[in-house]
Image (cartoon, rainbow, N blue to C red; front, side, top):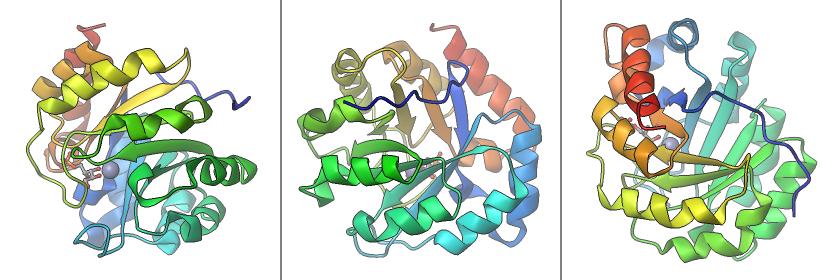
Length: 227
Ligand code: DX5
Ligand code: ZN
């Protein structure tokens, strides 16, 4: 079992997803959500193979690292996370989450993430049993429950994710974080928090809002009321 202590964040913690930011103005977009009260920055990495979309590589992560003190929460949607753990750790990631359905070596990957000084997270897509998370769950700082299929921003929250949060929450000990990702608005954030989520990823509802501070505050207020 891991001896690492996860970084402490407010409960709930709000993690804007850079996927929904204006890609031509990434530095300003990161500053906008940092000033608006973000607790983490969610960084979606897609390979065009595990998911039918391409996003950011380690070079962009390093550039973002230079512009912000925010905790960078990397979500690897890749068939081969083993190849990219070190490049993202060196690019300044604070947490690296990978999909358990792509590997038979989850404990080894988690060990490598820790050896490189990062927190580790595991996740699976909504059509994969959460039982797949169980063998390695004691070793991670973060468990991510996907509330959309990995691949695109702007999708609708899948309500069955709430049942999965309720299932997984009792498997976690104090200090391990349960993150929900996809389709989070103030309404769905409240439901996710009520089920036991304490890190809420939101792309569209924060970055596509004209007032990011207000959007973050609305998600925070709606989910705090559930605590
Ligand atoms: C989906 C990504 C999510 C996505 C969330 O593959 O993992 O992080 O950016 O975006 P919204 O909040 O727009 O659903
Ligand atoms: Zn994500």
